[in-house]
Length: 84
Image 1 (tube, rainbow, N blue to C red):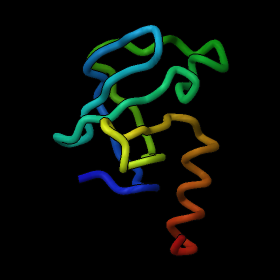
Image 2: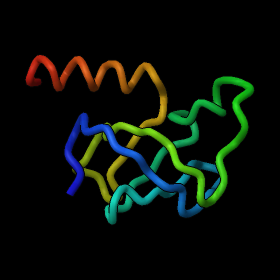
Image 3: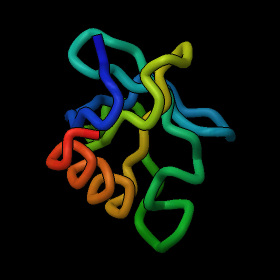
């Protein structure tokens, strides 16, 4: 089960115009297109089978919402360290 601010390695299982579905060690998650580095820069778009580092933004949603943005990962790391 995924928890808020958890960092994990995910595998892209489906790609859609609005984002990607991912598998995080057996748990399904969703990364919105705006939470992918390729949305903001010239980084190549993701494809099915790609592995990404991601952080859980909202584990209460179905599927849980994740982000692959470095800034979100830094914020989550700070929140984990401070126990929030």
